[in-house]
Amino acid sequence: LVPGKMKEEDCAYHRIVAAFSGDDILEVSNASDTKGHCGSNAPAPIDRRKLGDVIFRDPAKRRKLNGITHPLISKVMMKQIVCEDFKPSSNDTSIVAVDIPLLFEVGLKMKLIFAIKVVVACSSGIQLERLINRNPDLTVEQCNKRIASQIPVHEKVEMADIVVWNNGSMDDLIKEVEVAREKILSRKHGYIGI
Image 1 (tube, rainbow, N blue to C red):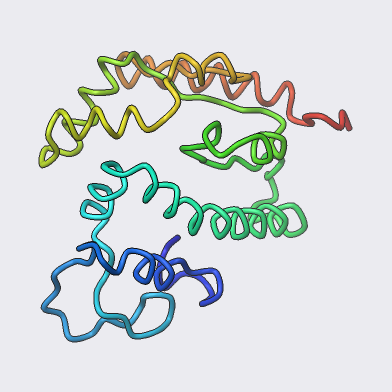
Image 2 (image 1 turned 120 degrees about the vertical axis):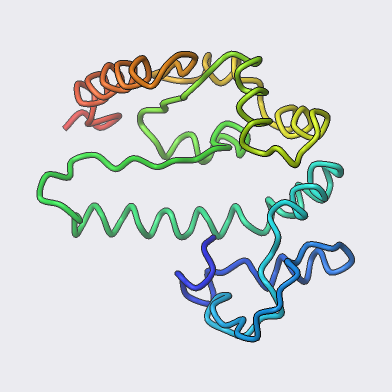
């Protein structure tokens, strides 16, 4: 949840800092102005890398973090979806897309909200290679732990309504996305068939 971009009651910052008070999760900052964390003064931003190290070493702590963030993310997401439905941000809006990295991990409730589930997938080898390249400070073991904390890609592919394969070039991906877009537009009314 983006600090400074939401109402205080929708912000997870203070809850996360309190829940992980025994762990080193804050950025080391020399900045005197720390305003912006959910609209209030805060000691320092959360260091996502440090928090990641903590939660990917300990499944119980990962569940604790998810228990704090998932309800808030769901609340903010649903507010945005409803707002878009009643007051579209564009005259051409007929579809609302939501990017949920852990959709299948969070359970049935979230999966039922969305009529069409699209998974962007790649081979496990490419997945590991990309994670290592994106996070050169992580070890291969740390990258493998992060991947292992999620449902395997091949299982997500089985649960998806539409799969966008991302094993190749950017041109290949653009073609896959266009095919997926056409499939979505042909089914855009989802369950209610309006």
